[in-house]
Image (tube, rainbow, N blue to C red):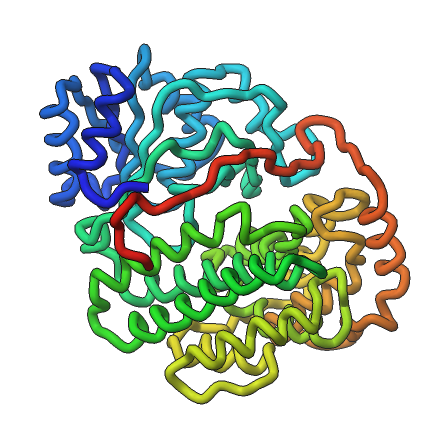
Length: 432
């Protein structure tokens, strides 16, 4: 991670390439930072071309974008999380053309795990203009496939460098910025609660990052417009939530809420973070009510207590009520109305893509998923309680998958990061 175009140019010079392509979306193509980046690359001796991406980030567009990348061009992705995901996939396909067909899923699984040995040789630099996804440092990308959002995972997707600049956030509205902070908290809390036992040192770091996210979220929510320094701090903290060491001893599929929110977003036709805001309080209530497959109640309470102390306002001590109050304080809409048929459709889609023998949902039954979605949308007629006693069958399934060495055929093989790389701030850079 670098903090200025000058740092970027020096890193770029080490690669020895003489050509670069800058991929942007239309909303940021004319930002001053876009010109700064192009000028910096040109001054470093590169022949620079620009390409503006549009439309949904589906497999066809990623493959088409890969065809515009020639030779050993350096790839620069300047935009939001979706744009960076497209650029990550396109850069990989340009080096590994056989990856393209994997994105067009033929089975029901929502996960595309890149085969071992998949490698991207060309440099990939990311400049995020939004906060929350951490796409600029992550080893995953989302791709649309026949109306479904699939998750692609593999080390070859991790950008080589990321540039965080206050200039990049000139068009970012405050409401989307604070939603991004909530997204980072959601990711961090999922991993923390999903690690039923972990070395104390890792817990302290996670708790510290969570507390700082709450602090910066409060500042962003209370300012109109938010300070750009706070936006950069939020982006740095979001990146930290992807650190390997913050997910030690964590189930690689601990973020079960992400899988559910993904299907809520697709079926109900809403933005992912609106689905997350609606889902989080019922999800945390299920954890504290004893459903260990969704996380540890004790660990979630510990993390929430730390977050609550960091908040500027007085929040309830109980995690589910507390996170609901925090979301409301940040003026994020938690309402997500849905019909009974839509709730059933979400539950079916979630089980099809992530459950029914797949490890992502950890033995959660459709009835339990239906109950969570119903609570999230206020559609609670004739749904069951998501608690330990009613979930005995699912609990047995979860324990079985936890104790087995489940292997899934490609592209749904079980994935676990083996990278030894860490995401670090440059020497002398200010802490988030």
